[in-house]
Length: 347
Picture (cartoon, helix red, strand yellow):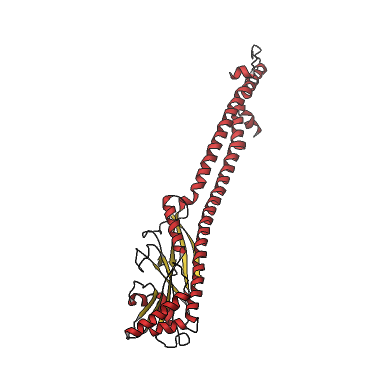
């Protein structure tokens, strides 16, 4: 092994050691650092999406809690006064119906807060009549009765069940409504303790939640390229789309990454889903990585220049001296090695 090593020219040995002791370790360290950095940037991008989802979930649950208290207050306040007035509207006598509608409206205005988010309070009678406070709902009785939340509420009295509507156009659900509103519906089927007349089949409370506007804002800014939060939507436990502000898109392709968070409330379960192209999760990383690679390239160029200078200034003269001494050893005493100044030699 020693004999073979001695036979390797000094210049080749220098390049060999430079590659194995400097270039390869630096490239290995650079690769590992970029790999770790890639994972960190990807993790940070996902955490940013999760924080945005937390905002939506917090806003939604806050509205749900407020709606629950409002509905309970409406039903049980003043010894079920509003329920009695609502039951009084279930009559074929026009004058009597009008009288109770006025009483119901006055009592409702006293109990309901004067906020624009409250859309309607609806009473659905067992004989098919309907009575609303504030706004009428643009859905047929058949459409309402076929919803999951209505059917579930019928099975258990005095228990609140939640549903929703995603308005697809202006005035879709009610007059004055806008497109892309997430309207929450809370439904309660009263028993004899809450509706002594036993005329009311269902009480419903409709309110716009700000979570829908937040999702619309996130999606609009994402499509403009102003954020990296992906397309956000709300889906149900069975995968049905509850709310979305974009046209139907196929997110099943491998190019998308899905970040999902559960929203448990009111005997149902929803999920906030954000779909983003996987490559977009590491866009910031590649900007940094390119700068690092450019810096590393400059360093390697400088190292190469230094190696070339080192070879010409030190190794080459040593090689010449070594060759001259070898010729002297072989008997050639006429060999002459001229003196060289390193600076002049480099020039």
